Image (cartoon, rainbow, N blue to C red; front, side, top):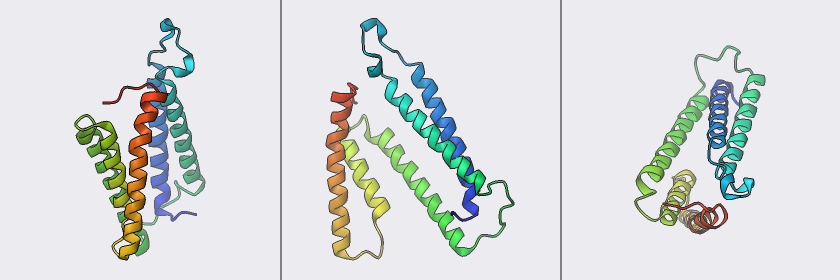
Amino acid sequence: MQTRPLVRADLVTGAILAAFGLAAVAESYGMPRLAERNINPWTAPGVVPGMLGVIIALLGVILASRSLFAGAFHPQPVALSPEDAAEQRAGRWRLGMCSLLCFIYAVVLVGHIPFWLATGIFVLIFIIVFEWQANDEQPVRMRKLAFAGGIALLAATIIPYAFQNLFLVRLP
């Protein structure tokens, strides 16, 4: 069971995710279906974004529902325990760092360097930022760095291949 201060935050997050998912479904429904070219309806450009939108909306509803059952509308404590305050600060840091890294990927890297390289750099830095611990010993750090490098290499290879050859999407 989660701590009380995060219950209301989960309700808000779930509602935002559900709204975002539904917006993605609506936008994907408006995408061209390419029926005039006799293209299989399952290969239309809006299918994958629509499915992802449904999944995001469903998971948002589940998160919001869980928070409701956990007492999201019950009175919340005014003062946080030191552990809850530290967890809240860490959560804000993770959200901010994730948002910053995604912004840098989408605005700075993609379109300015090859897509595969942008993706590899993003995945490598993302894993390093969120897995690195200040108290890790040198061998542990080297293993984490090798793991991050391996995943980044796989992502830089597989993601562009999938988009170009399976989804037939031209990449920047």
